[in-house]
Each structure stands twice: as structure tokens, then as C-alpha cells.
Length: 135
Image 1: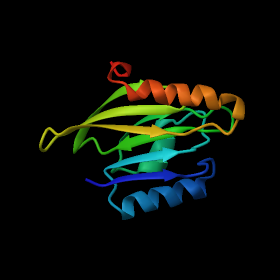
Image 2 (image 1 turned 60 degrees about the vertical axis):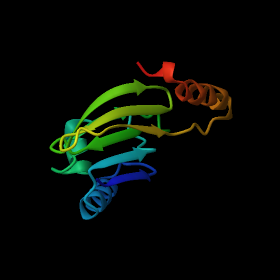
Image 3 (image 1 turned 60 degrees about the horizontal axis):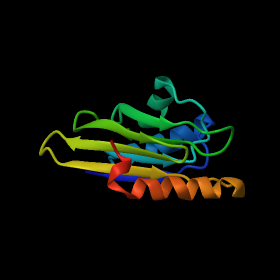
């Protein structure tokens, strides 16, 4: 299985989406975590521009204004996924491999630039550290 994580620094331009899609296809990504998408909404059409036909499913944490945004995408022919947590700064997805039933969790985090939000960010991360934080 190939997992790619990338701080993409914005996916608003079609040329950038093409670059990301090309990279993910070239490296046969089965799962990708894209941070700093800067997208307030990711439609299925936009996701196809990023994941192509290989990465056909996704969960997203929308950006707030032009900051943040996380997308976790995967190939549904080789694994199933369940959204476990969507926070202000983090997204957790549980994956199950369809070939060997291996279950694992993927956590993607993107911290705020605003110093006023740093305390909230650290509180969220501390909350994720304990087993009681995930239903």
C-alpha cells in the first residue's frame, strides 16, 4: 500500500490540481492526505480532478476562509473507510484492507497560523491522544 501525505499549499488553481493528480497517479497512491487545501468545499467533480479514477473516495475538513483544509482520499477497490473524527484542525479515518482485513487509522492534522488559535489547536491534539477521544 502506498500512502502519500503532502502540504499542497492551495488547490484553487486547475494547474495545481493537475500537478497533484499527476503525482498521485505516478506514485500509485492508495491513500493520500492533503493538507492546506485552502478549499472551503470539495465537490465530487473537484475530487476527480485530484484523485482521478484511482482515488475514488474522500473525506474532507473544509478550510476556513483561505486557511487550512484537509482531504483524505483512498482507492475503494482495495480498502473501505470510516470517518472517526472531524475536528477544527484534524481528520481521522479508519481504513480496512479488503485483501487481508488489516485495520488502521490515519490522522491528518493542519495547525492554525493565528496565534490566538494555538491553545485550541493543542487542546484538540491532547484530546486525540487518549483512547476515549475516538468513538
